[in-house]
Structures are given as C-alpha cells and as structure tokens.
Length: 116
Image (cartoon, rainbow, N blue to C red; front, side, top):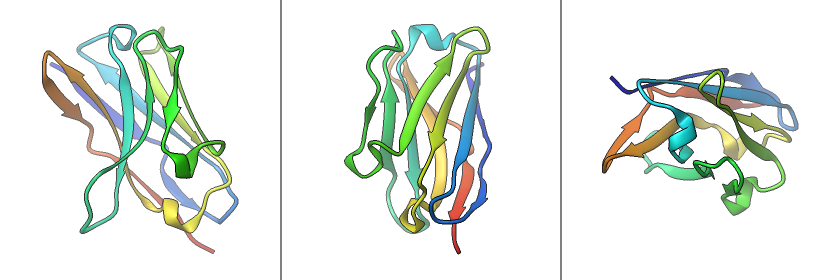
C-alpha cells in the first residue's frame, strides 16, 4: 500500500526556517518523481517543488525559488523540503504527492504557520 506521511511543520517567525519530511512507503522514491504542494483553507492546491525520479533536476515555483530546497534520501525513502527565509504568505498545509500508474497519492499534510 502506498503511503506518504509528512512531518516537520510548525510555527516559525518571518525569516525563519523549517524542514519538512515526507516518509514514503509501498514504493521506492528512486523510481518516482515527487512533489510538494500546499494549500491555504478555501483555496486550491499550489504546486511548490518537484524532484525528478533521478533526483537531479529540482524545480520550484517562482515565489519560493532560492528559499526552499527539495531533496531526497533514497536509503530512507524520504523526501525533504527545507524552508528558509519564510514569509507570512508561506503559511499553508504542505503535502507531498506522487503519481504511480496514473494514480495520484497525497499525504495528510503538515501545517506551516509563519507569524510574528
């Protein structure tokens, strides 16, 4: 069974940092591209970052480029999202997602709140 479990969210001040982790099970992240997305209540999901299945070409939405870093640990089967220089507008529920055989999987998410 495919499972994605996010952790690491919390409260941070503007300019602060958090590190989110997505623990995957039921498949190997070495064979899948992985994404982080986020959602503010009442709004649609926004894509944040993607790491391809080779782990070579991360891509980011413009507003987080240079502040967020996506990475993976194949041995641990985890995908991380390092959030630096956080801004109030980064407040959201963050989810990791992947698509396997045309099926989209998404974890329950971890809340990131940026406030002074």
